[in-house]
Image (cartoon, rainbow, N blue to C red; front, top):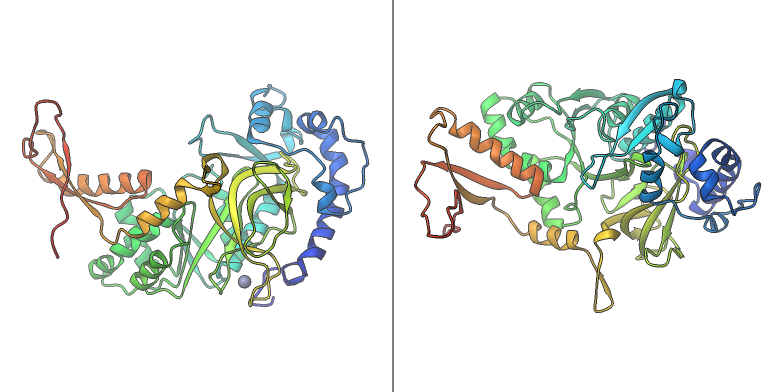
Length: 431
Ligand SMILES: [Zn+2]
C-alpha cells in the first residue's frame, strides 16, 4: 500500500470523474431502495421508475430527505420492523444498531448489516488514514459509549487501519491521562475541547508518571475550534505534536467522512467509495458548485447502504469550501464546517452562525475561568479536590468552557437579600 493514500485510485481521481462514477452507482442502487424501503417508495412516488442518473445534476432532481422524514419513519416501528419504515433489510440480517446522541429530541436508530459494518470500517479507516493514523500507532479512543456513532464504528476504523486500539473512553479523566502515558499512546481521538483540556494537563501528567510523551497525532472534532489558528497553535505547542487534524462525520450517514491531510487546512472527503456529496443552498435547495470559497449545506447519498439507506439527506451542516486542489494529491474538496443551518441567523443580508461566534470568543480565552463553589457542610474534607476536578470536567463537556474550580467552605460567598448564590466567578487577577 502507498503510504500516502488508503485508496489511491479513488482519492486522486479528478473529482468530476468520481462524481460521474458515483452517479452510475446511485442509478444501479435506486431500484432496490424503492423496493425495500417503504419510506423511499413513498417519497419517490412521483418519480418515474428506472430514470437514468448520469450525473449528480440529475440526482439533484430527486427530493431531499430530512431528519423529520427519518424520525416519522422510525416512529412507525413495528415488531416486524423495529427500525420503522426505512428499514430495508430483514431484522435477521441486521447485526448492529447505532443511536444518535439524542441531544435534540428522541434518539434516532440506525441499523447495519454485516456489509454495512464493512463499509463503515473501510470509509472510517480511510478517514483516519488521511488524518495521519498508521499501523504503528497506539490510539487512545476517548468516546465513552459504544452505541453512538463515535463509539464502536470509530474503534472498528482504527483496527481496520491496523493501529492498536486503546479504548480508554469511559474511564475517569485522571485515569485516561495516566493510561495514555503508560500505554505510550502515539495518537488520540477526542472532542476539540478535550484536546484543549489535555493541552493544559499533559505536562503535569508527565511529571506524575515520570514517563515521556509519545503523542504525535491528535484528531479532534465534534465541535468548532480548530478553525481558529490560536487554538491550533496552543494545542500543538502544549502537546508538542506534529499533527493536529480536524475530523468530521454524521451519525445519520457515516460517522467519520471528513479529515484534514498534511496541509492541515480544511477537511477532505474520504468516503467517496460509498457516499456521494452535494452542496446546496439551505434556503432554496438549489445545487452549488464545489468551488473555492463556496458555501452551503452538505447533502449525502449513501449508495452502498443496506439496512437504513439515505438518499439526498440534508445534514444541516453549513460548510465553506477551503479548496478544490491540494498539494497532498487528493481530489476531494476541502471544507470547514461553519455552523448548523438550523441556527443560522440572517443579519443585514449576511449569514451569521452563533457557533462561529462562540468559537471566535472561546478561542480568545487563554486561561480557564476561575470559579468558587461552596461545598455543602457534609462534603468529606478529603474529597474537595476530586469534587472540584469532577465539576471542571462536567462544565467542560457540557459548555465547552474551561473553568478552574475552588471549593470554599459554606458561607464564604456573600449572600444578598434576593439571591443565595452558591457559586461565584472570581475576577481575573492582575498579571
Ligand atoms: Zn490534502
